[in-house]
Amino acid sequence: MRYNDVAMDETTLSQKLNSLEERYEAVSLLLADPDVIADQASLKALAREQAGLEPTVMLARSHRRLTRELEDAQALARDADPLIAEMGREEVSRLEPQREALLQRLQLTLLPSDPNDERDVFIEVRAGTGGDEAALFAADLFRMYARYAQQKGWQADVVSSSEIGRGGFKEIIVEVHGRGAYSRLKYESGVHRVQRVPVTEASGRIHTSTATVAVLPKAEEADVTIDPAELRIDIFHASGHGGQNVQKVATAVRVFHIPTGLVVVCQDERSQLRNKERALAVLRSRLLEREIERRQEELSQARRAQVGTGERSEKVRTYNFPQNRVTDHRADITLHNLPSVLEGDLDSLIDAVALAEQTRQLEAVAEAGR
Image 1 (cartoon, rainbow, N blue to C red):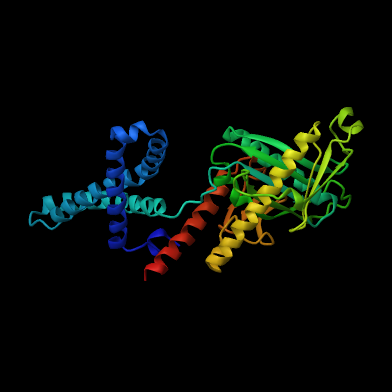
Image 2: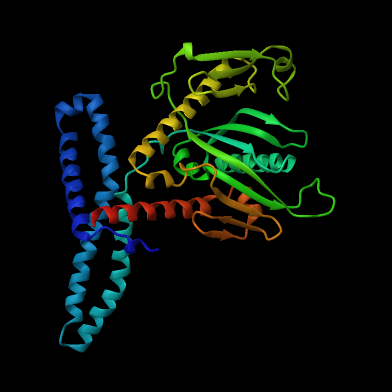
């Protein structure tokens, strides 16, 4: 479906743009006010607002200019002189696609933004069906996200992991620090399926296994209040890798949130205090995600289908090794570059899913305007 099939009418669009431009001009005047300049808090807030409005206002002005040029060209195309009319038609054919593309970009800028987009994230990857092969696939996904983070200049730190013998993971939790991390990685949530011949399969048969990915916006302490009386915290000896100090000293932490039954285990740090801090950070993010989902349910049934924040049980992507194929089922896109994707080349897939979500949001806007 194309954007213009679901676009809001231009009268509504024009009204919204005029309102935003008036506010942009008002904010620009306020930023030159000596009283505002003297108030650092107000100055920063207004500067952020201006920065948020500026891309849309600049696009709106370009759209207005292109509209005037197109109208002039259309007038020339109706001229009695054949040569002038031909020049006008050529200009119309050049300007119409530009104006349409600009209109699409404008509508996207008017969609409500996700308030969590600039946050850091926790990525939780868990082996699903398929035994050891599922755990090995979970390890592949972890490495894929770590490499993607590296490409973006983000920092990825393992918070907690539960390994199996062949290098796979029953579960691994990674914290990704970087501006806009959630805005990109949120689309990875869901069930990922792999089809390949396992290294443990002697007969060469193709198996299907799964792993689940949950992407949680990192919650700050101010976002979620946790009553210490509602926690049970267990300290125990870490297992697995981590060095002699981790093995000999009881540094691993298990946090049990009594009201919800949520459990977080962190044992990868050498410090008991650091493990506790990280476990509580993961717990806060899980509680924040629950609150986000609760609010979405209250908004409407349609919102629950939002890409990246919907049901975890939905199969989102298939990695087919024999056919060198990756298919994202939400955006109906197939790429034949599986090794590259597993090396962290995810932007094409993420862009396609984001585009599909934006189209759904535009459909909702168009429906509301009817």
